[in-house]
Length: 354
Image (cartoon, rainbow, N blue to C red):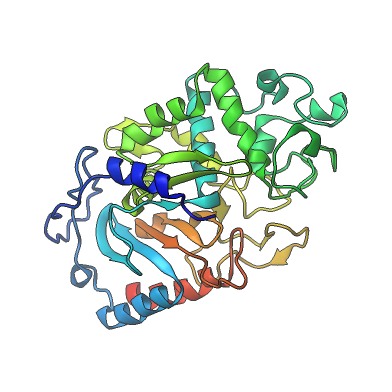
């Protein structure tokens, strides 16, 4: 999906203008950028002992693979920030399904505020008959099933409307990647008695200084922001829901979000992809692949992944966040989530950081 021109104008207006960053520093303490300006501390590659001769091949690869932007943070500080093909620091781009993790974070915050429990039935908030399943089957579906992609609902249509939400399997017995997660936005709105945008803006966007907005299309609900806003969310995730001195999302829920949510696809948490597991599944298939999700990436990596290779990789063992935004790395074969691009990109990143 391409960005609509009026949306570009709106987002450009709310994006902050570029200003100089603080000079490189080897400080190993955790750093959070200010919520109110674009000054962001940096760490030099030399201070980290990285292989600077491998940087240009990484940049070349990113450019060749239709990237718009790329950032690496270590301890919250920028080590590498690049823009390609006419993109800029303030320009917005779509998160695609990487925005799913924004939604699972919002659900966790709604739970900690007492608006809902993820073990509640979805019908508690959307009313009986929100799906086309028999009532006894619909009543099996909880918020947690939507978070873990195990609702058992039909996944053949991306359009999330009541007639399409038909029975395939009992909730909790089948993992299938689909747009049904979007109903969680309606659940949060109903539980908190406000629009999802209002809830998101007050409890996530303003807390960590993101820009951007949700675009509600007929089929897809997609978040658009600049690349540094995506990096801010990665930094929140790196710190298990903490931003500066505030626990925006409580750590117990965050640990659930970033752990296997079920045993059918252990490489999936709450709308979040997990590396280092024994097997994984991918969108549009019921086949179980042996091995880890991204073999070249650190085993403890977890990630928000979206179509056309929108990525927020979080690596706790390295105190690192990596962000990539852009067009599909392989325009002839775009993917909804994990692809061969991830493994190839991590080979290039490893040449720099190891």
